[in-house]
Image: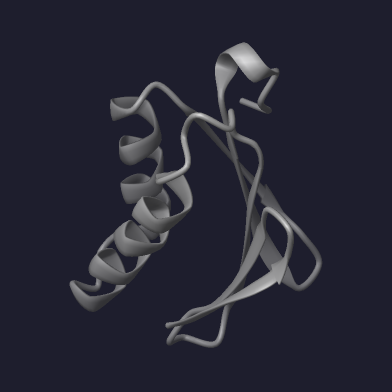
Length: 90
């Protein structure tokens, strides 16, 4: 997996299977500064274990009071991470 900052609040992740994932953190409250690093760590740990990436990100979001929404784009999976009190998509 190769994560790279694509734009402010948006991270592009290339998975080992060639799938492209865009992780959108723009709806996360500013007081959750570590969320981006923790979600990327969750993605890395899950992929190394050949686990369910969507399930792992969803579980992390729920455990931390965030929302995680998944959208299937034309060429990628988009994951929107949000804070419910900030109007995050969920």
